[in-house]
Amino acid sequence: MAVRFLSKKIWGLGLVAIMALMAFTISQPTSIKVYLVGDSTMADKQEKAFPETGWGTPFKYFFDETVTVDNRAQNGRSTKTFLTENRWQPVAAALRPGDYVFIQFGHNDEVPTKLSYTPEADFRANLVRFITETRAKKATPVLITPVARRKFDAAGKVEGTHTVYSGIVREVAKQQQVPLIDLDAESQAVLQQFGVENSRLLFNQLAPGEHPNYPDGRDDNTHFNELGARKMAQLVLADICSLKLELADRVVKREVKTTVDPQAR
Image 1 (cartoon, rainbow, N blue to C red):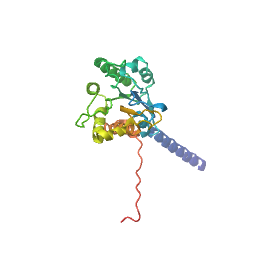
Image 2 (image 1 turned 90 degrees about the vertical axis):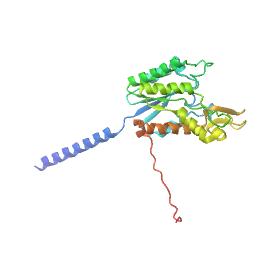
Image 3 (image 1 turned 45 degrees about the horizontal axis):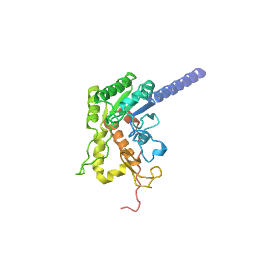
Image 4 (image 1 turned 90 degrees about the horizontal axis):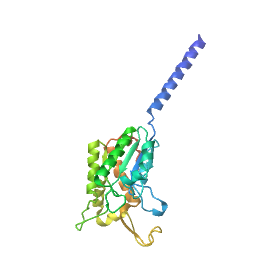
């Protein structure tokens, strides 16, 4: 009788342990990838370009261990060249259910003098292709309007430089019911807040001799430095949360510790 009771007790404890393990396993979120596809304002940089920094570089550090950010953005690319150079196809092939694709183009699509130029109708069609092929893999596409350039008028007001192509991104997002991050509008607001002179602090602007990578200096109003890239990444992160994407649950949450001065009254 004692042996039978002991066997039942052991079996019961084993069942409880198995159920607890199953519950723990079920509660653990599946690992996912977040792919970034876009141009130089998003891309990781080679050491020789530093301090130029794409916003995709600091973006990867905002998430917990269940998220891998795979930054496929490349300098100078448009939706057209991202396809013709076979850069999109490997991303589409690698997608798994639950993954995300953040899509930000426009800077190089909109310039008629560039080989990367993409007519408006083709730009629209390419965005739809990215969306369709992402959804076919049960992944989530997120459209992003091209981040603003630093351009002010004589009165010190920010001037938009992506009006047409940002408009197309917004239209496609609405028509396809895709989450939209309006980084063009939001980054313009940040530049306006900083103002004409202080906004230089966000871009890769260097005096001659200030950095060995740019001995003659740099006056770049398109590409960010580390601070500017982090500001843009924070805008994207805030929108991920406001859009209530599942990805928001994977953002690292650090407890803010405050110290109390024992001498304070």
